[in-house]
Image (cartoon, rainbow, N blue to C red; front, side, top):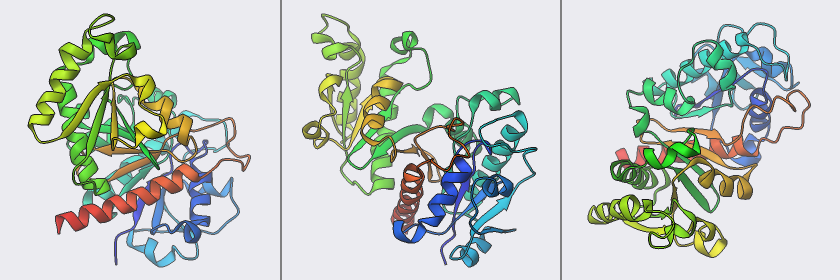
Length: 331
């Protein structure tokens, strides 16, 4: 029997517990593989009246998954009040993430799905990573800069080449080496996780209108175009740089398998506009499969039973599919 997926619950005061429970409730209709949650089971019980089954080992999840949501409990998160985060909840979220990542790394679980956390709360307890992506990469022995964040929807995949940095710093952070590294990792990730054997990657320009041949910026000429040439010499179908404002309509999306974007909002605005309730964050370049719903903790609606589980369902489904593809490729 295949190992189950591990889902870290995220901040217990956020919508993570609710959307995980709702995903389990829709497991049959959504065709989801068996999974278990790590975190404080009380956080689920506070927002959901469905069946919960504490487990002591991941293999127990397969046994109970049909009748109850399996939860591998970590030390409790203090007093849990939906919508009101605190540092005890942040400690619980971090312990849940550490446990889930370790179980996947050991092979006891076959893929990792991470629930939404509050970085503001995590920073108060000494968390020193830009986000969960970099934390998981470190636990896997991978340098954070070699982990590639991809956001995926039904017909759009985007990669922000730089992520959580000031916009004014992006130009200085871009380099030919960085662009080539991210491009290679994206091509490998598309083949390994999505089964796209000859992936097409399109680079967005940094400046408006892709710099207009240097008239309004030289990043396209000095950085992006040389990187594309190196990738093409590697046999990767890389194209661009293209004006970002014309890259994301339906006809354009059909011409590539992933869009390489220079900065955070250039990538996330189109994916969240099109697939706000179903976008998935998948980390490429790791020895394990890791996905997460592409949204935050939504403390403002936690405990109100109105959180939509679509992105979590999509993240679980993609994690299962990617794990199957990797296993088949390795075999």
